[in-house]
Image 1 (cartoon, rainbow, N blue to C red):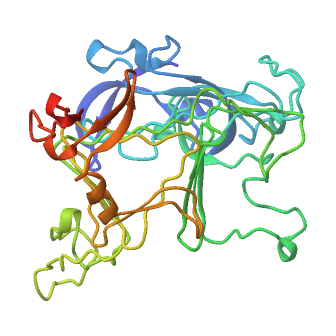
Image 2: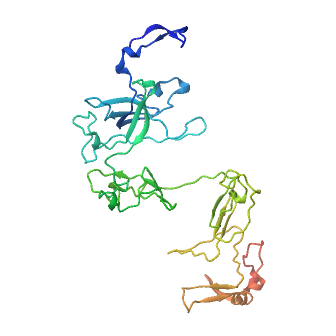
Length: 378
């Protein structure tokens, strides 16, 4: 590109600055003011040498992600490839807030054929890369960037399209939210239900095979991917409640002016403190669970309760049932327990049967019921 010395003029014709500038009017092939639709061929993360930002000064090195895009409708008679297209984020990316989402580059053909990077005789609509719209900063053809993402025409399954026309569509398409990233699916349906699934986490697309389960065919990875771990700051809490939401009341029943509520508020929101429905509270030191009806824990093997200090069972009605459910349940009443633990009883030991008098058990601490010698009956 040729440059020359030229005075920069203000609107009134006076010279404001002398500088070396380019007359782009003399080089129209270096300018592009429209938008171009294309498919992502390759992705260059910030540390790859082909990424321009990796060659910046040290304090700005590697701050962008870039890709190569095959233009599908740039008006030319042949396909054009644009290099170093900046991948713009979908949300603010600064020193504090940050987000990142990179597109899928081309690696295969949807028909199942091999991907030829030379693009000889290739049909761009058969490529598996993500589609995008690109623009150019200041109209400069050497400063392309992703403006927006574009649907892949070969994926009508996730769009819930039956292919039989709008009047015969069998799946609900109205106002749902659906996102799948690396196989993890999040759906908020039109009723407001939230479904999170890691069933297909870390799965691989199988091109050339028939769709399955309403999706493009996938090879599941049953051994890796799909785990969930949540880190909570030690000073904070986790709550799950079925109790009615109270206006303006947030975490641990504290008024929160950022929540949706009457504006301006008539009075300072105050929690009722009532817990009538299932409620789970967890902090660093304890977990509290309230259930109004019943708690059922079922296992095919065993249940173990372990405590360094003590384990207590409290009930307004002294009742302990043992055995399978039914009319002939073996039942142990509280009165029977008192009878057992106030009269000598016999246990089997490695040395033979032993009779124990529980009334003379001497604990070595409030929570230690180790039997003393006096507990054994001759």
